[in-house]
Image (tube, rainbow, N blue to C red; front, side, top):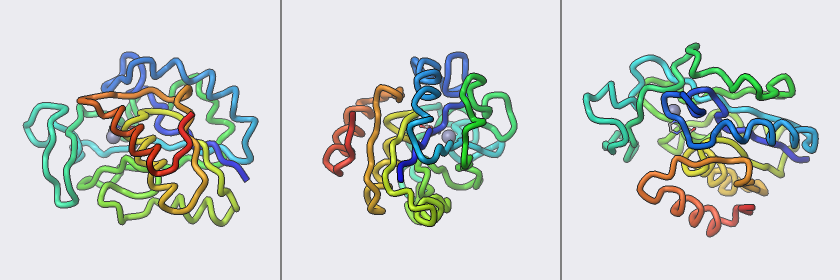
Length: 196
Ligand code: VGL
Ligand code: ZN
């Protein structure tokens, strides 16, 4: 059984958003078109409380710098996907009416969550693994935003958990900061993610 997992196609990651990913909005219609080819369609939604610890504004440090958190290194982002804000909503053309599941992540104030499976401590589960396993969804295709952060972290956790994993880069767009896209693609290929 095959699941399409659509990562974070939200206003803040599209043109005009707080953390706009170049071309983010271009993937919406193509993603809508492939949904019918899957047994299940799952959306993730980045969902941060005001003052979240991944926001540069919470540390008085400039955005896109790195800091050490108790769980490891963390990039500090502009405020984005604040719970209930316009930026946190899915792109208005995305066909979320076809969702079997909408999974929110990043809602704990003190920890970020790039992956759809685990928060950035790599230990705290979101519950997605259990959902997929109990429905027999073992073949996963990841699309969405951003290729080098939430898509890559999700795909790498998925292979580690024993799923068959495809990342369709035609339906993804990247932040690509300091070579992060090349690094993420290399990691995914060595981990036996099928990158198409
Ligand atoms: C993401 C940075 C911060 C993503 C989310 O969806 O890739 N990136 N929060
Ligand atoms: Zn975020």
